Length: 114
Image (cartoon, rainbow, N blue to C red; front, side):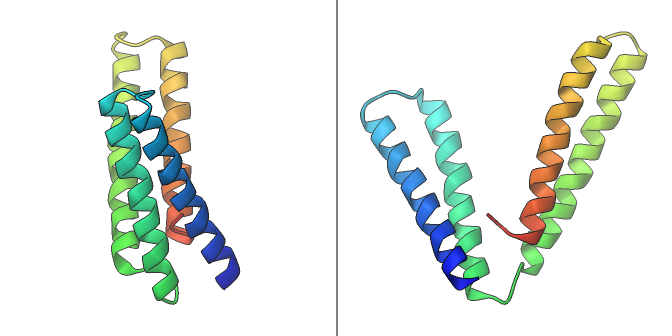
């Protein structure tokens, strides 16, 4: 497990290095670069914290629960917009799929913070 965690940390560090390279070559819009940097730097922090503990800490669990509640609020609103006729069923399904993927990411982060 230690080797796997080290490999995960290494991989995220490589991701951040590649991101720096893309930024230096001006191949990414600034707002996208900033969002990606925040996302992957956060992954690295969670992995390093996970490595130093016996597993997922309380902050990660609590954050995951809050994120699931926010996803649920978004689902409820999307459902209401569909019922009101402000959103097509096709668009609702696409949004639901994105929310499903985000929820799966949050659940996985609760198990393994990568």
